[in-house]
Amino acid sequence: DAGVTQSPTHLIKTRGQQVTLRCSPKSGHDTVSWYQQALGQGPQFIFQYYEEEERQRGNFPDRFSGHQFPNYSSELNVNALLLGDSALYLCASSLWVDNEQFFGPGTRLTVL
Amino acid sequence: GQSLEQPSEVTAVEGAIVQINCTYQTSGFYGLSWYQQHDGGAPTFLSYNALDGLEETGRFSSFLSRSDSYGYLLLQELQMKDSASYFCAVNSGGYQKVTFGTGTKLQVIP
Image 1 (cartoon, chains in turn cyan, blue):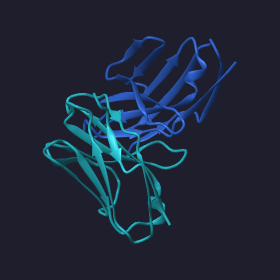
Image 2 (cartoon, one colour):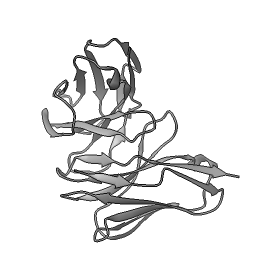
Image 3 (tube, helix red, strand yellow):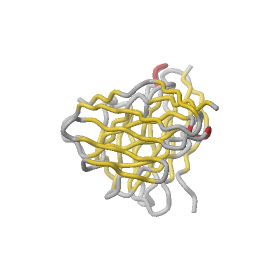
Image 4 (cartoon, rainbow over the protein chains, first blue to last red):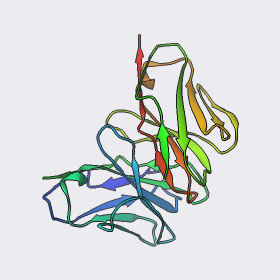
């Protein structure tokens, strides 16, 4: 049984570009949350998707958007990249009714 | 908004017991979770407390006092592999909205 998978593993972009990160949840999970983790900090909640809708959102600008597909996989899109967007982006899946989140290995985004 | 406070670093001896405290300020509190993250790894779920009291899972226990907005993670019989960062996280506002603390880096020494 595969856990949470994310792609790509690493990504290098330049300021102003756009990026799409992908996440496949653990089998049986219906909820996907995205987090941004800067070096030495805790994960910061970006948003959460359930039933293909954004259900919760953290304090991130509209440049951050997402999508959930019928198979529960999800994408995170970031437009107009800034240097400060450089971070580890983590995807976590869970059951909507459960508190335990399973995290993927993350995508390391570097913005130059 | 939400804020969580936990010590930035803790050092403990192998075989000993260590307690990592977490205090929080939030509205619409649902529960407190704990996660472990090794360097270069992903966070892994350890426990969740919605009600006051102690929850025990093997060598790890977690405590919550809702009236004091306080919780702790207790690690017993420390092993070298327990060296990692430990994050407390609150479910608040929306039930599924999770806010993480800044983490406590635990170093276990021989």
